[in-house]
Amino acid sequence: MFKEPAPRSAQKLVDEQVHRWEQSEKKRTVGEVPEPWPLITVSREFGALGTVTGERAAEKLGFSFWDQEIVHVIAGQTGIQEALLASLDEQTRTRIEDFIGESVFGAETTAAKYVRQVIRVVRTIERHGSAVVIGRGAQFILAPDVALRARVVCPYEKRVADYAEREGLSQREAKRKLVQVERERQTFIRRHYEREVGDPVHYDVIVNTENIPPDAAADVLVAAYRSKFGRLPERTG
Image (cartoon, rainbow, N blue to C red; front, side, top):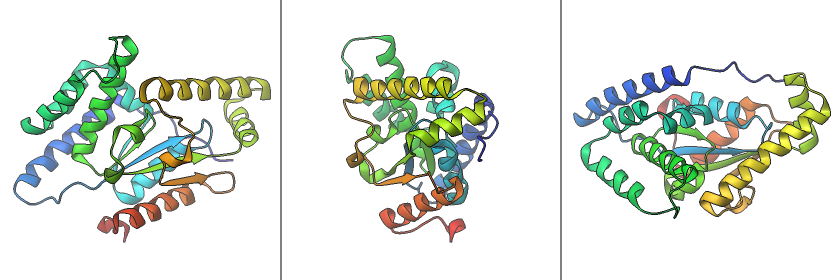
């Protein structure tokens, strides 16, 4: 059975990515780096291995990878937010600030502020391009023409069984966890984006990982990316 990779240091990964962005921006100004590629957003059912599928797709495309933990850290820590914004030119930064300044979510609540920070982060990633973003409703933040919107699913019983085995839980405990997380994700999307996360019309491609391992599922995303945008970065052939 496939095992999830060990947790990574979000702070370190963000710092490294911001540094790479800074170097790319310098090269882009003198024509040494092409314009950024469109993004891939990956929505996933809990336990369907959507995160690792997205990571494998990022590796195949040579893209940066932004999982839920990294986006959460960025949205919650001012220092990293400032580092991200500093990686943008002033004109682009102003457009982002104007977007965030709109009263998109109504009342000033902690949750709404957090979502605005998430939007700020995803828009920054969009500006730099060539990235895979996991979760946080990124598929509803970006316009359809700037991202491949993917969803990774798997039958409920298999997700329960696999999660129980991975985490050393009973079937009952695993079911409780899946129900809790799925409810939280659905509520998050409904409240802040007014969408149903499981509605297939929101996605360009849906991959069922019941009998498809993450590496092969990632190949599906890469093929869909080629179909949607007409070509791939050179490293993928």
